[in-house]
Length: 413
Image 1 (cartoon, helix red, strand yellow):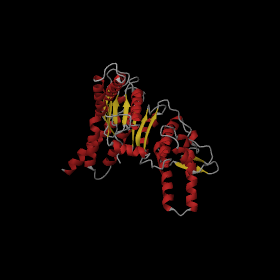
Image 2: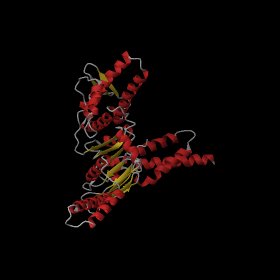
Image 3: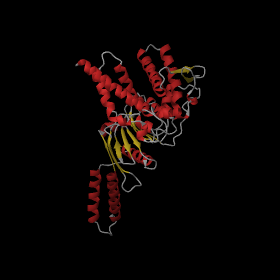
Image 4: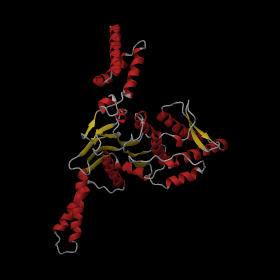
């Protein structure tokens, strides 16, 4: 199953005379950036409305609409003004003309729509839109245990547009107690392994988000609640999270519950998730990892987000970045410092995370004997085109790598 299915978008932005968004996605995630007031939120809402109509099968092909228009125009031409069906044909000609105009202003290429609708019919596809003014729901439970079947039944009765994040800890508690019963009472290694793997996934997702591989998600049976344990900190519950982490985990919990309550693994669910101002109210350190966190947690979902944060734009290297102010896609910005992306926006110095990783790789190779010249050359080639955007420390590392490469090749000669 492919990760996502939107291949290209061609939209005339509503409320503008000539502003048109045209970009090829090729199934990749899309990050919309641009100056304040350029229409990022408007575009996302327009896209969401289009997708809603698409999944309700309310969008016809251009050929089908043209065929209907031609038919009703012919009928109208052959009908006298006094005939009782005259107004009927006039209304339909006007309606199909508007539809034709609209479809010329909004078109999207979705690969293999039949396969997509098959996923929709099997409840294996989600469409979700998170507004910029979203409130972080309290994902903590109330200390009561419900049967896992009751929790799932309640979840299945909700549609995909409803927020399910408030079911998160309730589900964790119910599933943990169900797992304890399976381990204690049933001889079912396969089911036991499945339950353990699920909790391990959630814990690993939290470790990625908090950048703490020692983080432990631990159940407290007396309170019937989960606590996050980190070295050097007192254990804390989900309702004690900062507003930034609470905002992220509210979206994460909603998406996870959408799939889990329908017995679909998070890594298998496909869908389109739209997030307006993904960086809203987040500390810089969280902005750097928010996008990759969601992409890793739900690898087959195609994310389309807006942001004005250079740290979000800078943190990815396998997504389409589109500047709505200039109406053009941007090149891979992961190797640029944020100053080069949005000069002076936040007034602090930073170096790209991806660049830092490559510089660390280079340092490791330089200290090896013998030096892996092929890998070193590859790293130099990947960094060198961005030399003008590097800070002094990064340029020094690059020069060190070049010198090490020269020394190694001289030795070979």
